[in-house]
Amino acid sequence: MDKAAQLIRMAEDELTEYSTDARKIEKLRRKFSFVVPYTEQAEVRSQVESAMPKNFVAKLVEENRQTVALPFWGIGGLGLLLGISWKQPFDLIATGIGFYVAFQIQKWGWELEAKRLVLKTLDEIEATVQADRAEAKVE
Image (tube, rainbow, N blue to C red):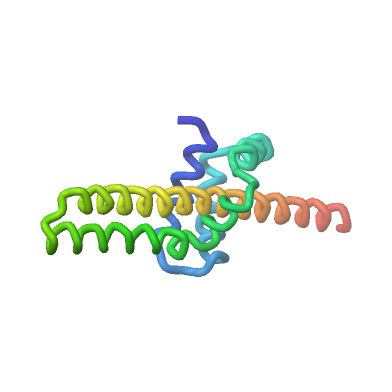
């Protein structure tokens, strides 16, 4: 597994915990320092940034994945309800499709959010290093 993918998986693990972005970034900074040396972080950042889609739909899904997936959860639930109550097997197809699309949208949003967290963390590391270098020059 390449280093960019490894950092994204670490960020996904961190997303499972309920905490602020600042706390997540602080915890990830330590982990990232062990995985990727500072000299390689700019290269990894460019890899992650190039993998981020920049269209409107991707931005919408990243920020509101649950809201975007909600209609598809509804289609799946309605298909299940109608398929069982009216004994219509074709309505059960809508269930499968609706649930699948909803799950894929949420999964994609989760991955996009993790990539964004990786970018924020690498930017924070860079800013800290630059501030330390500027402070060292002053002294």
